[in-house]
Length: 344
Image (cartoon, rainbow, N blue to C red):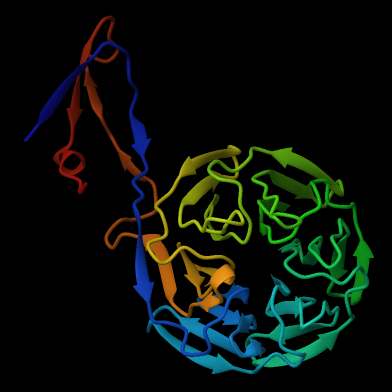
């Protein structure tokens, strides 16, 4: 079947990008319910560990295999159990340290993922903190900010020299419980809060390590909040959940990093919460655990936000033939059957 449309403008052949994501519940973490764990990924596996549950701070680590939807316990963190820890990945190592245990601590360890082994590294030299900022850029780790007491300090870790170097202080307000990530040589920090009653934020800041400078970007829409979570898929950062001190949220937003613009994404279908762990595998993001701190309720469920089965995330180039071409006032557009019968 051929479908003809009449347009009053001239149109050249163009590309159509068809992407459709959906939330799917996966196997729950087979361990203590918890919130504020660390989460990271390596190759095609995800990892969730540490955090705090009803029995106190935790130090266990679990590996998630998406291909079998199964969890495997790995070597436990060698330091004291803690939550709100810093975590970043460089090469084959995940670097984990600082956090609350039950006071703020500064020890740091690196986890060699292939060999399932932990090794101590130089302790964080700045003000002890938890629920801070952390990401990796160009073979260096970055962490700092956070609470206990509030600090703007921000440090870079060199894996080759095992040395921490203080960098430009965070340019936003005093804050903790932010969501942070890196993309294309820059770091990003959004949301957060300070004080009690909570004074939450929705601003976004970009860190450029080459210039050692912070730049404010477009603020996240929706309610101001802290304790958010999210993940990066391609050039889109999905951010949401969290609370504002009275309400818990399950809405999600998509930040186009290159365009510095926000759009509404699909809401998280699970119970609204704060501080779930997160990681990405391929073209899917995962949220696991988290809690409702005001009610002392914790979770161990795991959710995937990924492409609908059968929908490719690659650009599909569809040739649309216009007649006549060129035209002066109108033309007929001939759309191929394969395009007109695409799924909703």
